[in-house]
Image (cartoon, rainbow over all chains, first blue to last red; front, side, top):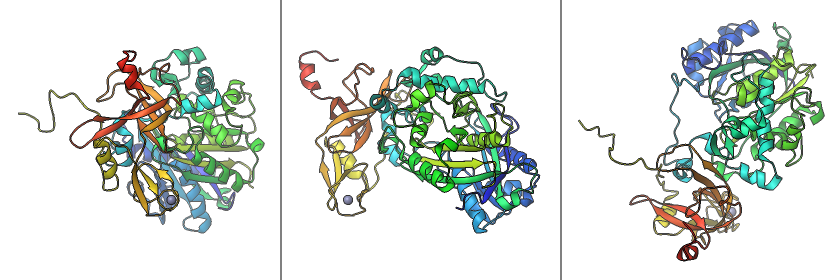
Length: 380
Length: 154
Ligand SMILES: [Zn+2]
């Protein structure tokens, strides 16, 4: 991909956020899509490329009345939308399509029109993980952390502080689900879910959606919103089984995707004004900060504890409140991208002054996949 | 009218594996009380989960062998939420086998507490029969047998 050859010209979330029992999954996709189209000053007939996960691109295109010449149904979990951005930028550069719509919608809480998710007993997870009693992501995604704690010396307090700082960001965001400030003690006395993880270290479960519209950087100037350029991208996958992760203290998919995105964009770490790291659980920002190279191995807990990622810090992180406090429908990556776009447009509720470069880094599955997107508001 | 899809008066049990042609030897081994791994004949790497080729080099020349059954505790969580077939709080663990591969399992014959479950503690495999086809490989602290004889372990 040529850095900066594509730009985001439309971005929006669903009209409502949190509990939306009046919309099905497909309806949430459509609501977000229509909002993003309005944001870009477009109608469905202007779209010739579609990408989505959690719903089939066929259903999405037909439901909205779109006849695409490029389709991407890459579904690797919550970071699928980062991969869609990467693929869309390449498709636009290659001339496969001109204007791409990427959608997400999930009835995570109300489960309206949602498919059942269960591992088949004959699948690898069904044979080699499910018999041992995992009950969803809180008991799988969290398994590597005790090893991380043993090898880095991370304290429970520092793990808890991740949630505390993000709640402070959420307090400034009227759309965040949880806005009341919390303390480390609140986190460490909240209900135990799966030792060492307590309730306030785990993401919300809500309904919502979001959509993005991409086009070439050349065309982007003609749209009503200031363009947000795609400066660099990366993606990878590691394993569908968290038990088979190569290194329990570091995600290979994070490292591969992050390195590629930095290389493509040509930026350095201290060029980054704002960062989003998909936080289904409190340990993910720690792994993300280290695997993307912002800090050394085992240093992320101290980095957050010392206020570097909080308001006024040198690397504002998860400024919407994150999956821990803003919202988490199940595949959160879209909301990380939306917040990066808001920050670069200067329209975020907790705006980082003069943010010019933002990174949205996503995870899929339980450290199974990753996508990293470097965005900027100045043409490269 | 009895509902054929319901099995009343039966406690819910844990999710059980359905072997596939590629994994049948592993589950047959477990049923017979042996932990079966595979090793590449070309590059000598031992690997798990089962597949008919080497994930390190792609060679189809691989052999099944019986592992020692010794392992160490690599990481875990202690689940506090209810789950079918489990009672109370229980650890969902990943162990590192002596031969190198890691596998998810449960730790048995040991209190399910952070104080008792120490990372890197030595473990050995035991097989827990589930039905006519499936026995699950679980792990207990190494030397649990002799401790039990002395009445020190619960
Ligand atoms: Zn080999």
